[in-house]
Image 1 (spheres, rainbow, N blue to C red):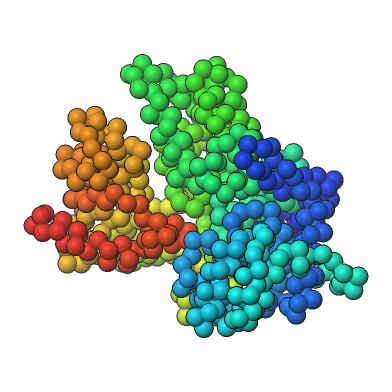
Image 2 (image 1 turned 180 degrees about the vertical axis):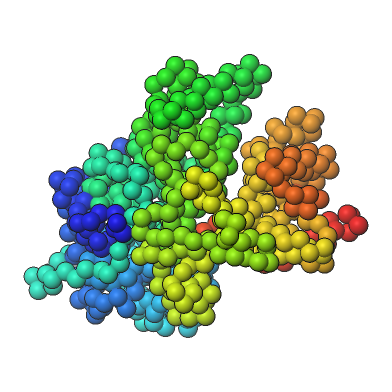
Length: 584
């Protein structure tokens, strides 16, 4: 089996299947502040997509796989309508991140030769026009805007040779419109067979639609005729959206699950409450190990009902991916949330997922088994002493879900894909006796210390970020140094109470300069490192506390929230030098 639905092998067909099996049920949901969700039905979405795609063809675009359409918008129904318009006429949708800087936007538009961009708001159109006015992105000819805009924007576009159109200008069908629909050649991988959604299921869309993880989850939902409700666009309002929408399937990233875990743990303030919480988790987890998944036990009614209600109270399936999740957090949430929680592993280059945990498997600390549409093998990484003969090595993936290459970048493609079509992920895996895969190390971004030991900083950072007062951490070392140092951004919500326990008060900036606080955070991180099995040379020996978050906007994170290591090193070089001077 290489397709999720055997009767729907393209993304266009998947959506049409959803229309059929749902009986034209609710498809895309949206809401205004304080209001209930409103729904567009499957036929409405399909018709609008067909009309929009037809309108784009009448403006000179060709229905081929070489036609790239940019989508520059936050999660909303029109995003999906624009995407489906592309698939309906065999064109290719290219997501543009909300938070990408001008340089990255210019690069993507030029590299993909994007002549048409659909954006949500006037300010996004203005960003695109600014680039055009500087003589950049000469290929850009048309901007379609979802929301209302003023006449000045149109005039500004005319001056630099760009047509500014509303979605209504393009979308309404004309009598002479094409009626033949060409299908996209893209297939959908069987990444989430365990979820098995139905037309009664509903999910919430808040993860970026430019991320493959969110796109795959939504595609599976549409194929089942299920519902997708969009958050209001403000992550701070997500709890209110969850309570209103009451999703049954919840795709999530570990960072959010860590917050849920920390919030519940911090609520148990007395020794008795902590004992009771731990006892309840043990009792519920014992049920989970027996295959009993429920949210109506005495422990749910006494202790866990609040956290379940905070997610809407109806979640039956969670899928977590994009980063590792701590086994202790996963075990706790499986017990407290009363739903199935699956962990997926993969990357954009293999359509988000290449392994998936199995239904009924209550163990943690692994990423499951290969999904049916691909095979996985481990290959030797001699310099790190990992050998496939020992069941360890770099994770390589081959299958229908593996990408064909990076657009117009054969050198980078050759680095990722070998001659036989195997994708080299850069992750180090280990086969466990039960046949599941455990990610144990990272080949990319590794470096040597002065004494020759190899360091995988991301593995270490994933351990340290579990420290309650730590929001973000950057681990640094190089071949001239014998030890590691770290830059830590404390959690602004946790640090004041953490400091208060030490008898210290002050502003965030003042607390970051306090040596006692630094020592306490370093001690907690070191303790977590020992518990996770980090070797002595993998532990940081000193820290610098920095009050400001690493963000996409300040250029320290990629759009997929990965650390930009070179930029972090450059920014914090003075602090790094000072840390090493103090150690010596």
